Image 1 (cartoon, helix red, strand yellow):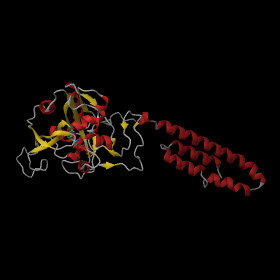
Image 2 (tube, rainbow, N blue to C red):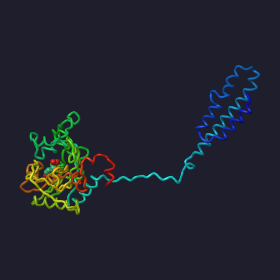
Image 3 (spheres, protein in one colour):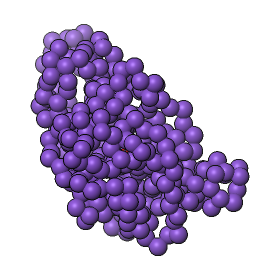
Image 4 (cartoon, protein in one colour):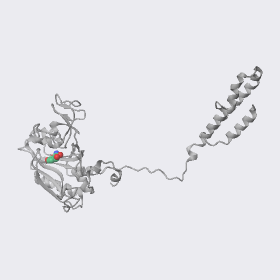
Length: 359
Ligand code: DAH
């Protein structure tokens, strides 16, 4: 075997290599298990002592040389592939799209600003409620059929057993002894929580009103929506005050839009009298009897409301002979549909960027 020729050939080839991929083939060829050198070294054992003494050191020297050259080359390839030399300043940059707020968040913030400016407190409550707050304290006792109308998602008693005594949680929310737990079906329980901790006169709205119902969905219905609860109690707060506050709210929230408002009698166990608030349908303005949005009625119901029932006031220790007031519960999703001209409620939770990016 001619060590010199092999060495020169390897050196020459190595000098011309440009990438680590071809460097690896070079290593296999000159230093791999089946390289000429490796085969030679393996065959040495069969040679005579004299030959071993003469050729062994030479072969080892060659191997050390080749290994050293390989190390050096691989280091220089790493250097030359550093990003600095590969960086192409003429390529366009990667666009980082800044996020923005969801239309429901935008609407919610604006609503709270409007009610703050009218002197309303902003209150929140737990999404997991006890049935005392969600129903009983709101004049819906155990046996009342109104419980059935709420399509409630109950939590299993295995996971959250009924309470043996009243408790106050770390987050400051109270639950009553004997409570069964559920995902709140409306934000009205927060009226009760607020009245337990405040003395009239007062006015408040609920800030983050996510609610849950086991409903089939369509263009107007979702199983998880957002509510705007409101409550105002004083000596002489009346339905006329309710009408004024809601109209004022609409004026500010819808701006210049030509929206008409209507109050119509309705039943909710926690108010007496009760009324629904509707606004003119943005889908058809009453002109299409097949309208998907209003079902041909020309009106979209956006809230329930009414004068707080004396039983509700009594349940929180407020004397209904001295105090009276109104409450309302708006669907924020519906209000947003009208404000932004959206004709399908399910788009809000669809996660569809084509929709979301328009706001
Ligand atoms: N909680 C009712 C619902 O979700 C809406 C409602 C009606 C709220 C009348 C009120 C009210 O405060 O007075 O269906």
